[in-house]
Image (cartoon, rainbow, N blue to C red; front, side, top):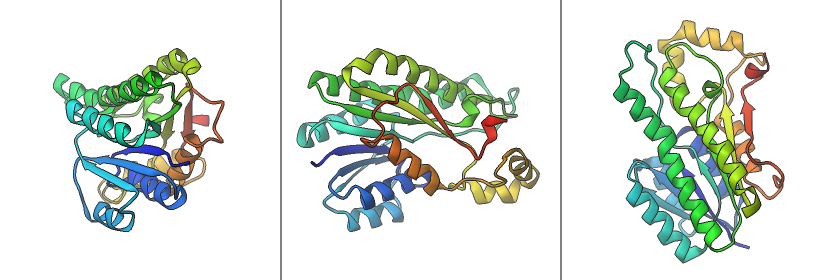
Length: 248
């Protein structure tokens, strides 16, 4: 049976790896992708999966546009059965250099925008009595203290708190909501990080029991399981994939 799934932030890094894996492995499903910009990777996926990849260039802060895209596609193809909310931004600045407006910006991008999407998916699914499995991409920064990452930490810890409450509220409505919290991953920012912040990079390796950063593909593999039918009894959980960092 064909399902409609959603991936936000599908243009690079973890989101791109998830999108590629979904299109490759879930051959009967339609994937609705959202990204702020279009790039060569997206163009390639549109061409390769022209009948199954529905891409929309959209900033998740444009709530009206996002909600309209979700409504149009759900009315056309049926309710979204699974969603991976990956889009977000990060900021690395000391607390003293982080303005209140910066806190507001990171919080709106990483938390409020994802709350908006989650609410829309829940409203549509419960209206028609449909199941929906929602995965919010968080970070180990949401539960750990990190130097110069207080803005990012606020947004991810708030996202996890929202997820737990929403998961409890809608568990009996066949809505599953979980968070996947990666550690340091070789995503789009990795090479610049290793080059420009070598001491910090070496420190992250020393703090990771497995002695390496993860890959986007490893996070994608876990994400696909978490939104699959095999994951039928988990909701309200934060799943860490961090090479053992949070176990210390």
